[in-house]
Length: 477
Image (cartoon, rainbow, N blue to C red; front, side):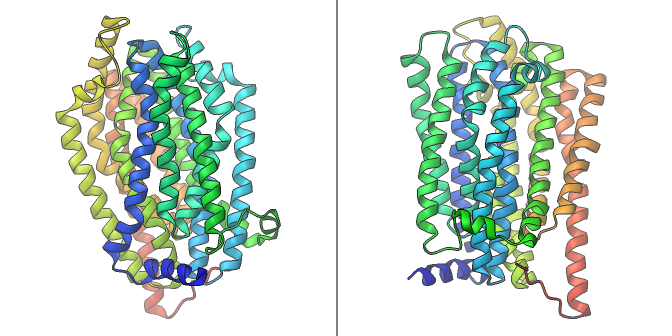
């Protein structure tokens, strides 16, 4: 029975028509990403009901630390998960089990380390991120609960979801993450406006988020243990210790570039916050709203890429490179289509979209209206970047699926440190806050051109290798 289910997953990766296979893997992931996005945005939405632009600015500051949770989860989630898929393609389920267990315990260790470091250096860190006297109290309260206390369930949930997805259990992974998101939508107003007194809305949002993540993590542990009866998944300490040196190296070779990519994205957001806060707290609040709204197309496109990754990894390892390229091409068309639609919608609905996050009828109405004005302009400028952002995500995930960690790392450094962040400072100096917003589409375009060049070199190398003779792609234990 269990063997039959594993065979069904391999059939999906290896022989089901590409559009159907991608649809089967990507749709649950997209839904999960969107619901996950909603629960990340719902804090901002309900905080916006207070009309307090300084609370909004404080939660914008903490976004960078929340994104670091995502970066750290990629180390073992994408690094370990993609290797599990390649080992399945190489018909090595025993080592896949050991890799999954190693990734599980690695996630626990790195989450606890991150929580400790943030707790020790909290106030200096918030000041570095741009917190002012008006915002640091709110930011401190949110960070203590969501990061110091809540990083373990958040990071572990993401890693478990990656491992489940790469073993073919995309629906189970999505249910866990989505359930946490739905729960947060319910708990946020309860803690913010009912259980805690007025003025403690930020603390209430933080408690709701951490509680939701913890419950979602419990469900994912249950689903993971259940799936491990049929799939090459494990959380046994004995399996984690037995993982081969080659597999540990592979996990880090792919996981570190993915972590660096998201970490550099976080560094870019930190740079945005520092530059925006130098203009004013209201510019910072407006940019923070925009960075939440623009995550909608990003969430869909990341869902497409995460659904694509295990299929690409499996077929790369099994040697079916024609199918692998077909999957990459199909996912690219889907993502660019989504991006085009999102540009149109965000350009037309920019003002109503940002107004969802800040109430002008309570609190300081003048500050709220000015924040909305900034956010509307910023959103219309930054929305143009959506297709190029997808190309960067899509290419990076494709290279990770093929185990091309060094090229993924190179792309991450060039994209953020050579193009986006320098352009941020340059265009802000030349054109002010609107130049800061324009740095995103310009930087992402440069990064996408470089990414396509890197992916093209990998594909051409594979084609040349096949012409010159058979080449073993077996994944070693």
